[in-house]
Image (cartoon, rainbow, N blue to C red; front, side, top):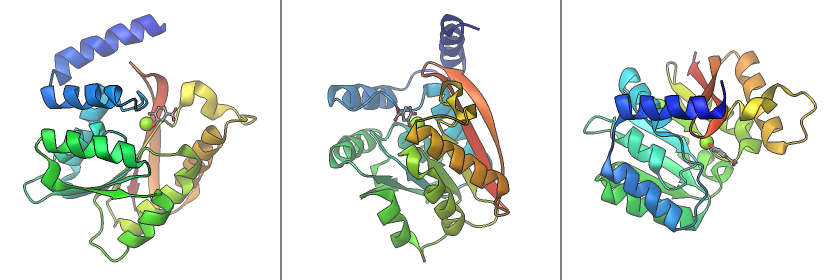
Length: 219
Ligand code: DHB
Ligand code: MG
């Protein structure tokens, strides 16, 4: 299929199954206006995250990479009354945009934004109640570190979701020169061999292009 085809299908699926939400659309608009990169998950993927939170019955969600909180809002809205999200963001400007977007969407009280490099923030979360679902969508170079922390901060049954594991097919290139792709490959290989995880990944095409998403459970 050509990009025109999959964009048309993505638009069809989005209007048929996802619909419109003023707060989510405002979050994207504010993010664009603030000059943040247009790399938030597609609406169909945001809805997938929302459904994974619901299906798993997650109450405590950890997100690594907030950006403007588009995916954060999707997940926070899937939580029960007493549910919460901890989301880690390295860029103070992104965190400001995210905070305003979360508050506008009415989920501000459910979401704690932790500012800093995830590799520094994650160890500070040790000793808290285990997370039920972890969404990894930050600097791809560090995916292995984040996947390891997902197991440490989770429990048996914790769901781990990793964005951008296809990278327009580049993930299957053993000679890739991209540090991001190499990080993605190392992360997938860790998921495949580490007995703490049972995992798979799907190639995806949506309005962001040809990429992929990995899903794992902590054994
Ligand atoms: C990039 C990062 C993402 O998380 C994404 O979904 C798409 C692109 C990037 O850094 O290029
Ligand atoms: Mg991403």
